[in-house]
Length: 57
Image 1 (cartoon, rainbow, N blue to C red):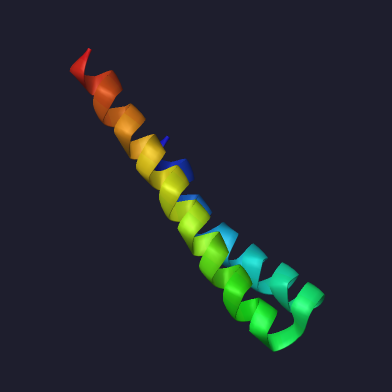
Image 2 (spheres, helix red, strand yellow; image 1 turned 180 degrees about the vertical axis):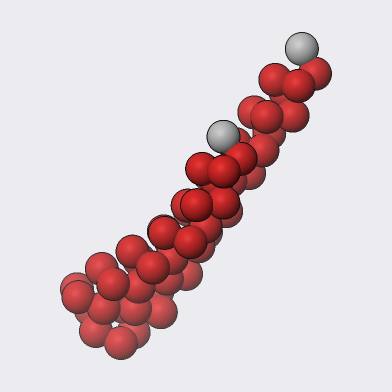
């Protein structure tokens, strides 16, 4: 699970950059990368929390 969270930290900002650039140009690239990073950090946090919770059981 932790490896997936780390992998998503690389993939989501790049996907956001590409999709944002495709839809809205240069400004969209910045917003897309930022949104992708926030989503990836959120998923990584949830995965980390689940890993800690599973270890406690």
